[in-house]
Length: 196
Image (cartoon, rainbow, N blue to C red; front, side):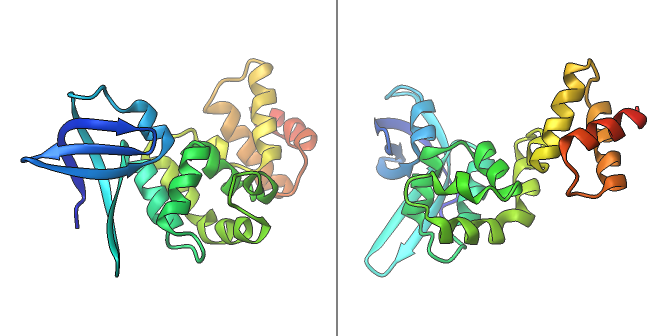
C-alpha cells in the first residue's frame, strides 16, 4: 500500500493534487478541506494516503492529517459509503463537526450533508458512534464536543458562570452520572454546581 507521499506539488485543483516523487507524478484525490490547505504549486508537500483498489482502477486519496485519514478509512467500511462518497462528505464538513454529529446521534444534521439520506445517516451513527471519541482524540479535539447536547449546553453554561475546564467538564460528568445520561441541561447545571 502507498501510505504516504512526499514530493513537489506540481499541480492542484480543489479536489486533486499532482505530487511528483522521483520523477513520477501521482494524481491524489483530496477533500476540498485538504485542497484549500495545500501549499502553492512548486512547494514540497507531504500527504498521508490510501490506495483504493478496484478491478478497473487504482485511485490514491490524500490527507493532510491523520484524523481525516482515520475518519475516511472508518467511513469506507460502512455499507453504502465508497471512497468517492467519503471524500465528498469530508469536503462538506470538518472532521470534528462530523464526529460531533455522530457522537450526539444527530441523524437530522447528517442528512443535511449532500449525498447522505436518513438511512445512510443511521448507518453512519451505528457504525461510527463507538469510534468517534478515539478518532477525535487523534487530533487532540476537545472531547466535550462529543458529549450529548444537554451535557455540552451544561458545560457552556458553567463557562458563562466563570467555571473553567477541566472543572466544568468534570462537574457535568458527575452530574450526568448522578441524574442519568438522559437528563436535560437545566437539571445537569443545578447538579453540576453541587460538584464544584
